[in-house]
Length: 314
Image (cartoon, rainbow, N blue to C red; front, side, top):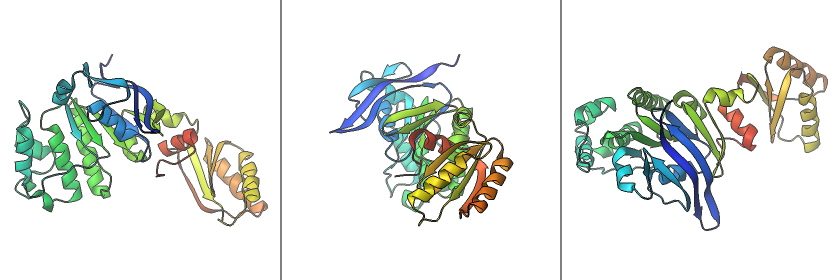
């Protein structure tokens, strides 16, 4: 059985009357990519900071590789690497200078040149930090997190604000870390990123865990393979929306319906039958629908089903 390397037991963090993290429990296995997935404000960063020892919990504890973050913080810092959501770098230093400076903070460090190669920064080693692109700065931040050869790497929304190509480059870096046996704790609000990278995903909302499982099992929990999504005109009144809701709930092979304002999502295992019935019956009832699309069910659908709101909501 795979060893547990992180154990989170009843972590709570309050700011005045606001509870950012509310009594969460989970375990992270050695060598896995463990994802914290949720919208902004879900408590992902606060959770990570308590595990890293950067923020003291009001209740509960976190243990990393056998070390309690309250009692053995120095030991914890020796075995973790952290890429913060917003990393302040020394703009006027060269890339190799800042990496060597960070390496000097530890009793031992990995060789610099291979690390630059891993982060695709070898050709930028003599470049000033201020001249790097957003993706290059994020790769540099990850390099700094890896300079002490940590057992556990924390990546806090590492691809936020990056273009698709830079995001994919970082995905490949994370997957290579996993191949080398590193344990990675990754926070994100991108469902595709979580699905591609994570062995298990902890869905968070409003400081609590709403689900924890593999991406495949989370999607399977919907008990539907496909989704049909459409919108009504914005001017439709609530009575009309209720009429449409009643109609689509009665369609053949539709197992579940989610409605959010003017948007309806129908879940089904028999896409063609459900889609044909939808088009036919809305036409017969003179119901105008727009933005009709079909797709496979996603983690976004799981989150909406469990919380009633989107991962993309602020």
